[in-house]
Length: 331
Image (tube, rainbow, N blue to C red; front, side, top):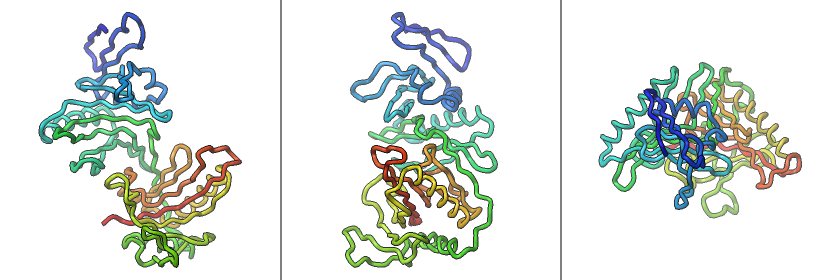
């Protein structure tokens, strides 16, 4: 493949002589970031190159300058792009390259910010997400720049996922409602700080694993449960925490479940008030709440409403359910 070099932040290569694949684009990381903000799975799919049969992914014809590899993965109709940079023997050198890439991205987009959170996979706290604060909430982008630690090497990695690419959190603005039902909900929420010990009631025939009944429940729900921490899952995942569970309703159509989910979210928004923010996923299957000062990371989404659908979802016919989870505070 023959390259054409120009004095720009973008280098475009000519197509190969057999025209098997589209034109290669070589971008600096800041130009690449802006490309991904306006692209989607279909646009990224146009840059799929030869398949790596061993790994199951594809070479990317969209290339980031100085990256050692650029790959595209297609999974369940979603597209993922990964650029892997030079590996280093020590963390300090890897961080210098990471910081250079990060500054280049941040400097290219007015209003763009990033936040560092502890990584699921390493001890180093540089698993970053990018977001825009638009005053009444934030847009969090499913673009990640982090340092991978494996085989005693430290490697900056840039990753883009078009699975729920933009997640919008809306700040709540009203004072908490003072109704009896709202007070009851806040008492359940308060119990999360001691892992629901104050509202746990032993079940007469408790299954293995420490399942409890909750002494407090939501209006109209017959029974609520307290589940112990999960024994599996990613380190640091909120799913590892003990949680309160209420099945709001079940065996209803998916469309009915989504209506009830929205009604429940409206009640919770009134109950918790302006210290919180909420986010609704693109399919309206999941609504989450987090504190405003802990916004943007899934591990901080302490209240979750989820529409549980069958594997074969037929609108108006499927038997779906609505479940509410409240997660315990970490130690």
